[in-house]
Image 1 (tube, rainbow, N blue to C red):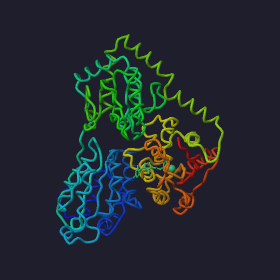
Image 2 (tube, rainbow, N blue to C red):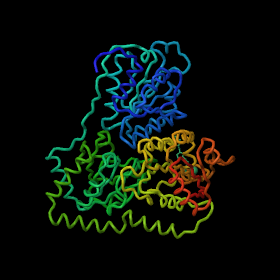
Image 3 (spheres, rainbow, N blue to C red):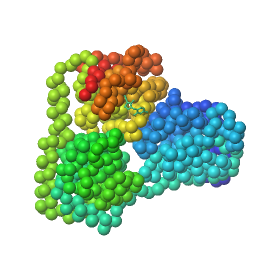
Image 4 (cartoon, protein in one colour):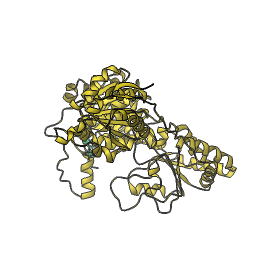
Amino acid sequence: MGRKQITGRDAFMQLLVQEGVTHVFGNPGTTELALMEVVPNYPQIKYVLGLQESIVLGMADGFGRATGQLSAVNLHCTPGLGHAMGALYTAKFSGSPILVTAGQYEIGYGLTEPLLYEPLVRIAEPLVKWSVEVERAEDLPRIVHRAAKIALSPPSGPVFISLPGSVLDEVTETELGHPSRVESNVQPTPAILHRLAQRILSSRSPAILAGQELARHDCFDLAGDFATAIGAAVYQESVAYNSRFPTSHPANMGEITRNQHKARELLSRHDLLLCLGADLLRMSPKASVEPLPEGLPVIHISERDWELGKNYPTEMAVRANVASTLEALLSVIRKLQTRNDIDQAQTRLETLQAMNWTNRRNNLANTLAASDSKSPIDADLAIYHVVQALTPETIVVDENPTYANTLFKLLPAELPDRYFGLTSGGLGFAMAGAIGISLGKPGRPVVATIGDGSSLYSIQSLWTAAHLKLPITYVIFNNRSYQIIKDRLLAMRKTDRFIGMDLSEPYIDFISVANGFGINAMRITDASQIGPAIATAIASGKPSLVDIAIEPSLS
Ligand SMILES: Cc1ncc(C[n+]2csc(CCOP(=O)(O)OP(=O)(O)O)c2C)c(N)n1
Ligand SMILES: [Mg+2]
């Protein structure tokens, strides 16, 4: 494409097309009108309206997590960016490659401090990989291409571009250039692979911490073969960003958890920790012990260099693509393994099987299947019935603070895109994220299991799901409270004087709320109704909401 006269707004849209952007998630205001004027001229890009900016960003985050592809967001200047900040914080941890943009006043006019004005770059800056304001239309190609390159290069993540109206309306003569992609599928040198293999083979009881990058690089089979070859126990990293390792693998031992004492106890059984594309034990509240036993040697392979050697000494820290590294490493290990190594790995695997995920899942499922139903419904039993009703291709999006642990124990997850969960700890992702995930995985049913409290941070996402007629089933675990906060007040502060933790008086009528947004909804008070309700909702291919009356319990 040669030099040509073009407006800033057209240049911006054409650059998005060039960069492969298929979706712009937005919420428009006056400062976005220059873009809204030309959006209809680019039908290859779908504009997805969210009714609050945290939802807009959450949808883009879901899309990024489901596809790994670049998307764009267009927010309404200062208040819009402000609303989106919590969701931007979440997207930072999910690593979604998003070009976040906001409309800004004409360059210079902000000096008079009109309504809605504040410099935007410094607001977004702490949460993005690059934050910039475009000052001249002729800079748009360089800025958009650079921003896309930064967003997509590992560690991927959101970037921010402030778009002043005067730049979008400027006519410029410029070349649009071309996208650049950083080839980051790198693996260690043969010498390093050899050292890694020898070190791993010297271990008598290795453990693997399986992390988000295994799903991102779609290498579950390979990771499974690797764990089998070395006879390692596999724990799933402490934050459930996504599915992290096939649950049916005999060495899958379940979640490492964010309980420092438990993680430490589990890891103390091992003489080497292999952290594969995972965070090394990202925790939540403080505890009296470190989750990593002192002196436990660590090998960490990750493309996110910030995570390497971050909190703990690491014997071998390798910045590389986890999939190609495991592939190369496995073949070196197979060459170096003695008969004795192979036998010992096999013996370790056999020992693990008695207590592996599958075994414990079967025990728990049998107990729950035999348990009596009561009303309101026991949460574990409700999760069991939801899980039993899922089809294999269903994607689960979860934001269920108290009950997520039961879900991990019961949900079979063989595929990297089976499950998407918490990334930052901030609530409000799942209602909106389910929409982005559904857009990114057309044809796949999505079931979003969400706490009543969590759902209300972004409940008007229901409208976008209805508007786009997406096959999403929202399942509300309705215990009429912020149960986890109550549990923690009791456990950590030894008091049960609960102020600000009940969602009753008035009772929130989710059926009316859902109906009001154009969504079919059903209230469930008996566990036996759960399976049929979920199955019907999934089969309908339409958005729906299932509100389950859950027994609030103080555990
Ligand atoms: C944005 C945000 N605000 C507040 C919190 C604190 N918080 C964590 S869990 C929780 C309660 C969630 O309630 P609900 O979804 O009903 O789950 P339950 O605890 O009842 O299982 C709250 C308020 C948070 N993590 N993020
Ligand atoms: Mg609740």
